[in-house]
Image 1 (tube, rainbow, N blue to C red):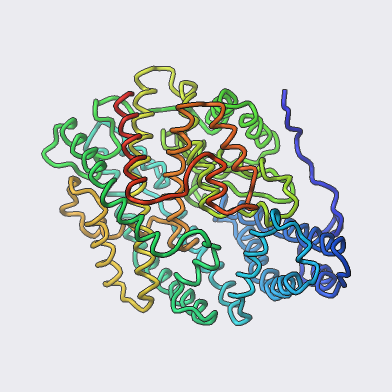
Image 2 (spheres, rainbow, N blue to C red):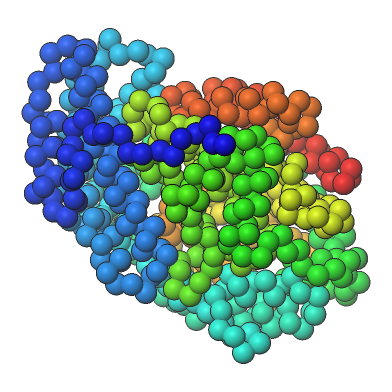
Length: 572
């Protein structure tokens, strides 16, 4: 029996329950009310904050549903137009009011009476938003939102034909796990060739996005978009130099381990050279892991897994199932990727992914499930901004769940050997993630430090980075163009710039959470839930501390955690 009731939308206190967002004119009266309203005491300021929070939650949830539906079916022009209507006709009007509200709040004499424990982080963010706001950036930011969505449309249209079946690239990637090397090679080459067909289009798109982003940064008084984004994303708790230190730590302490993984793989496969289509197949010749049959089976097994870990976790997913807040299977016309979209008014998020039956899909599901639990644990926080999480915290929730859930992966793998294979694969991927994160992040630093670079310079820089962070075992001879183009598959570069280093920081945090779990399961889960329940009312360091871990990416700490993972791999 559920201990969490099926959430219903709380009665609104400021907006009408029947409000339909189909014109700016309907909405403007509420923005004017907040702008003009007199605030004469602390109680009135707190009411004003509540009303503003409700307006933000309603708008963000409305936009969320438009985005989700558009991604599920990129071929439906009506859904795309609905999303673009909000971006072009609603959002540009909101931005100037948001700035006015921020200034109204900061200038209120009653701000000093707000509880500093509760409001410090929020007010810090508000001051940051005032600092970077520029009226002339509104149309540019709108254009960026509409242009960046083209990556999803271009990618969703990519299909290949294998065994006389046309399929998405996600589905075709399953062939990379087959034992027949010829089939793996055929799939790899077809996938890469299909990506190359849109190489020029995606380069043009990325060049345009870089140019607009650089202009946004300059308008706001920044030397480059990287420095603008560090403030825009609220990176108060670490610096650009910390990112470079992370890159160095990964190169020193992780690359030797991942190269060793590849060398062992080459030896076990008895291949003269390890090719890129040899990286996913099981080295002992066993069939690919098949943890579930279809989307429904994946969901049911994940609910069971989460319930065994802690009943609350399973209940969260059961509620999402009952409310229809999941779309899990890959299909033609569906944009690639996976995400958990928080819906702040109802408090129940939406999980979106492209499952095709692989082990990787299981990992994606428990990852997004971790995000979903985070949404449930923060849904009753007082203000919408308290629930709006920095990525370093959001990804800690999801990446920790990948490792914590392994405790009950026997639900997906009844065969003991398959279970061990799945765990070994997961732990290797945990470390293999870090070089790719460092590469993507370092690439972005260079991109925006050199915004007028040529496409040729872009490829030369990527190739140079891959030589430093990529495998020195895998043989890409004859595939130089495909290898140089691997950056184009990374959605984050196009849609959410600079959102990637967080995966690296959070991966380290997740290993530390799992290490605690191995020592004391219930205590580690209590700390995990306590940290997630804070939302964004504490600094990143304080949230990590509440989870019983350190926000640290020094070479010494990276080595300590990598050694722990290696030791656990030996035990399996």
